[in-house]
Image 1: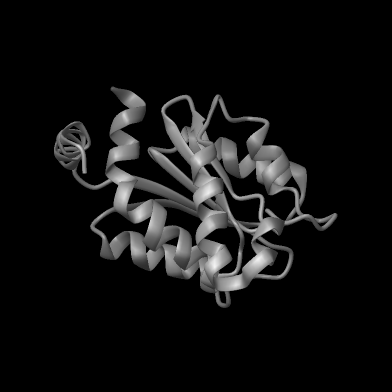
Image 2: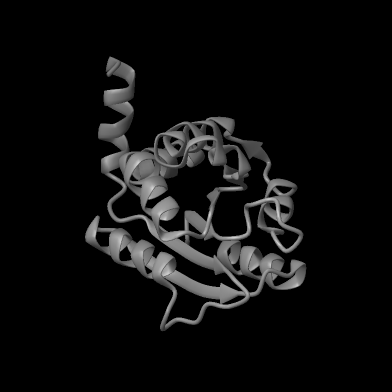
Length: 170
């Protein structure tokens, strides 16, 4: 690690718990069987952060946009969307969120696909995982499979969550 990265992480740790919004985009999931959203909520809480908004919305433009607006108006500093990032006709999350990002972080999608390659091979290219910022909120979109959500959380989001939230507002 670089000295400046270590310094940034130390400063970010002073933020305390990060408020996070979790949005599952699915036409079939309910709270009872939303394994990916459930995983995120448990992992966020276990890491000492706070889930301030949780929603399941259908893969339709208006509900996804409403959920994004709700996340941006909530105390959340991080909004995590899972589902709707593939290339099927019903997959709309990427298109709606990516067009709203003010500052894209292409490394998130690149790293996600690289790590996914190790698990699913060439099928990793079908993911349109993306991330960036909208105002003072970090927004990430990942596939809806629980394995994909767990990969994104454990390898990309959890290690940098406080650092991301800190960088956005400094």
